[in-house]
Length: 275
Image 1 (cartoon, rainbow, N blue to C red):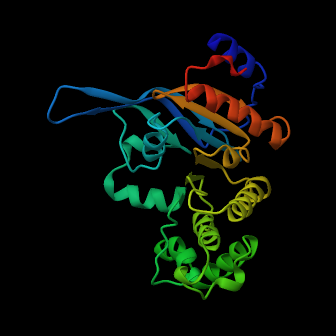
Image 2: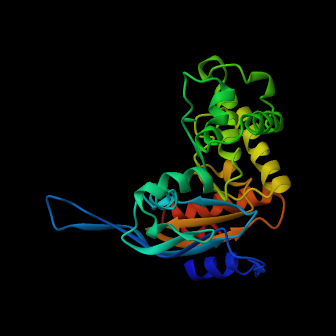
Image 3: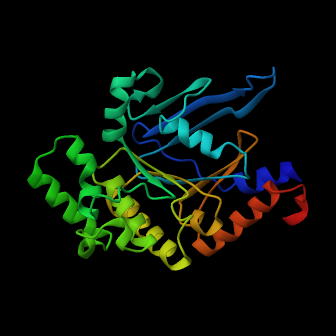
């Protein structure tokens, strides 16, 4: 049944045209953890390889412990791989020294987290502008960009508010604005709807979709939630540190959502008769 599953779902993955260098290229990525008190070694990632092209909106899903967060942390330069390579744009992140790493993160990566990671002592305007301020951008350019991105995300009336004065959905929109403000090559979103109610989740995901479609923002999103994942254009499913399968949307979001649920049911147990 598992062989049938792979053939059934991978059959409709269309061959993607490669028109330019991928924004993200992961090759044979492995991550092994060793216990200090024993000789036991566990593999969090076991030879993962994939590419993300410019303007793609890609989701990563899998059961708890599958390696999703480890993969995202390595791509985000927060963790280091045991072996393999990660290339973002033209830069192999394995070769970046510590001094260059902060600059690379600021200029090439945008981050969205479940807990927002906004600074409560700064207004929305100051939080959103922070990457450009650290990059020593012209103040007039900063003001213009902040106003534009805040208007796009519907928080332009909240720029003088502090994070603790607004809702969770509004805070996550500010986090999205900060991630987008420097026009990064890649936006990494780690469970961005995890702390939001259904209405706020839908609004945020619609904003991400608009940024992806209109501005060609490249987004890699890790989530356990099928509703959130259904907004992506492609999803990779990870099991035991390896890619189990992947699917493209290629149809309505409702149908995509139902296909996601079927795969998650298989990944979560041994019942292969669900198909």
